Image (cartoon, rainbow, N blue to C red):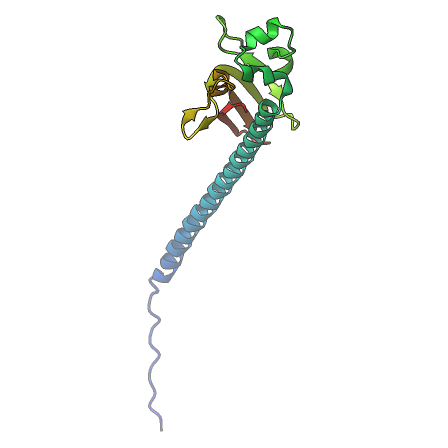
Length: 181
């Protein structure tokens, strides 16, 4: 016959498991909030990087357009023969700050550069005439003979300032000095 064991009186529960679960729940909530903030910050950083890259590409594009304006501009070809921009203008050449955007910085009162807008409507550039710089050389020596005068050692030099803007708030400014051919 089996022995009869009297029922034990129920023990009082301490409730420690409830406290542990609540602490773990709070820790997991804080961890979830930290991950959400971190991912939101990374999303903003990548958007800023994209905007800056877009602005840089726009500035670089408009800089190349301005360089082609300088290098391919037949109106400034006389600058290669030792004339200054002021002398060209006095002779009636149509190179002006307002129309061509080539502004003379060698004058007694330098001209304020005029914005030349790009096709995208957000980018623009300035072209400033800086005077003459060193031109073509042969092994580092200026090519001058009786038939070739000293003007070939001097070429017109320009500073191009290009501003590119993205669809966001980013803006990039690039500058380049160009010695014309």
